[in-house]
Length: 147
Image (cartoon, rainbow, N blue to C red):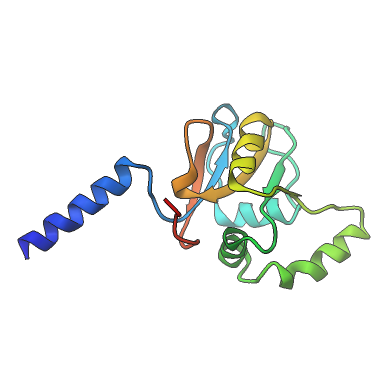
């Protein structure tokens, strides 16, 4: 029993020590944190219904490709739908002049753009975060880290 507890504590410590945290990290640049971001606000941001931060700065949401496992997990967590189920929404928005969030090919690309773009917000695996971004919200789930 004690050995099992020690093994669990050791594995948790090593995961934290090496940045291997589970979940989906919602990230922004360290100098651009608008305060607390919750799941409802995130839903508005990524559907382009919230366009400005309280500071007046334009919100710049960033997505991963629809086929990316993390995008699928993010969309299910925030909307309880798959990216494909939101296609009709985006077709309707397009005809109203509203474009979907930027789509970048990788988590590293999301971190680079978010860290350098005022008002940008994106998501990556929690284990992918580093000093270039600040985690403003963490969601459960997502694919396992590949470290």
